[in-house]
Image (cartoon, rainbow, N blue to C red; front, side, top):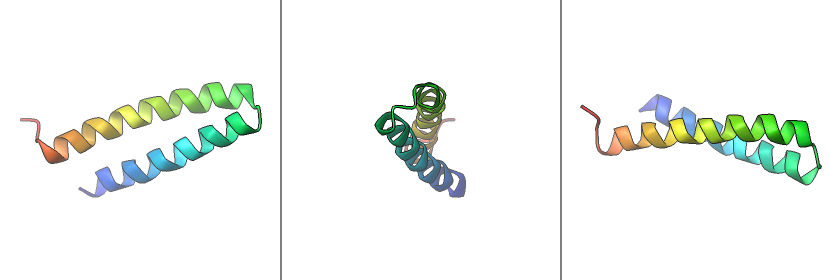
Length: 56
């Protein structure tokens, strides 16, 4: 439960950072941060699914 909350918080921060990189026209930061954000959001969605449905 606690790890899911931490993952959601980190996903929000990662999206905010990616949007900031896009706003400041930082292409390398956008590429690296966007990749990190996409993977982190994917892991977060899997964790939330596991909390709600439960993977057995």
